[in-house]
Amino acid sequence: MSDLFLLDSNIFIESYRTHHPFSYKEFHPFWRWLERMAHNGKIQLLDTVFKEITQKDSDGNRDELAEWAFNLFSDKQLSHKTDEIGVAYAQVQDYLATCGLYRPASYRQWEPETKADPWLIAAAMVEDAIVVTNEQAVHPMPSSPLKKEPKIPDVADAMGVRTMNLREFYDASGELVSSPYPIQPTL
Image (cartoon, rainbow, N blue to C red; front, side, top):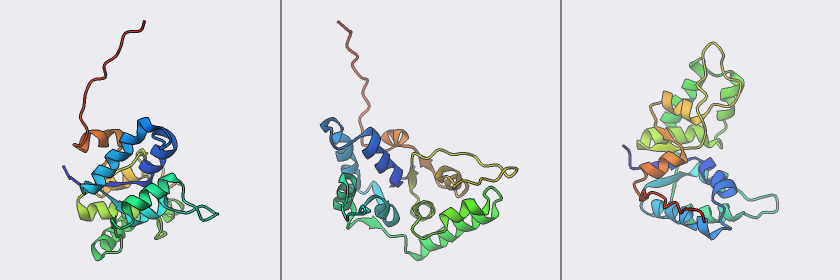
């Protein structure tokens, strides 16, 4: 198994907004774990993902997540602008256009250079990395090509890239210690 994980923006955004908000100290260990993984080189952030999560709002401000990511990854991003990743990106785009599983309106959503998903898969192809995303595969069928945006797990699988969700990443990271929860009897 690869020792490098590339995280999709939804891992950070959903964790921040829903599951592990910074405002509760009980969730701080989750963010410290991600920081440790970044410092140890086990996770990297693709520059296109970095841009998605560090965007400023209409007033020119960054939220807590954007500030956290900016401080942690501003000088440690994996650039999508390499020849090797460019070649892999072209393979991803060719697959989408020719596989018969996606309608043009579907795969065109992945054409803008600012769209991180195809770059994430291309970078994983080059770096032999695992993509961590909370997206769910939809398993499109040739008899009914998708009209909606492609999903990372479907396209990554077709390109030979392994994906996992956040829960699976907990186990695969090798950085967390599994221990049964000591359930207390009620009084």
